[in-house]
Image (cartoon, rainbow, N blue to C red; front, top):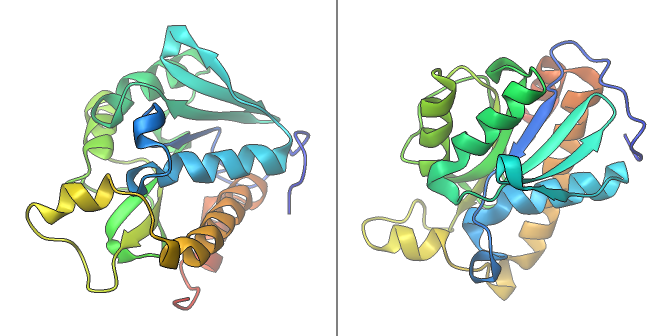
Length: 204
């Protein structure tokens, strides 16, 4: 597995832009909705690279050999503006952009790659679809659903903007590591190869 910033994107259909979704600021740090940020922080650590703020793109950007990591600072419902700007500058199309984000339909600890799809109620993905003009871009969903399933009604906002409980910490730390491994696998071996491995993993 990759361990430094000299990793080469040699795999077929390897993404060149990795976007982690979340909300900026201390208020939202470590909330469930920010698990995309957490995964990108771990990827940057493993690749030996660091984020720097790029005001022209309203985001935090880190470079690795073959591409870039992006954490938009636009707030979730405007994530597409930052992602589109970075992709345009580096000539990276939606099909070469892998988005990592929270999914309330997956149990905490589960991962699922998809190559396209609707927003399914996720404001960050809705913004990306609007900005890209297509829903055909790969994404890695990271489960945040509680044990009793997807929260309903008013519980939804409180759940996604709430912080992980003490009891959830072991599962959280485990899924962050596995999500980082999954993304690095797409960089090294391509999206199809990574999907074949990580979409078939048994439930934790």
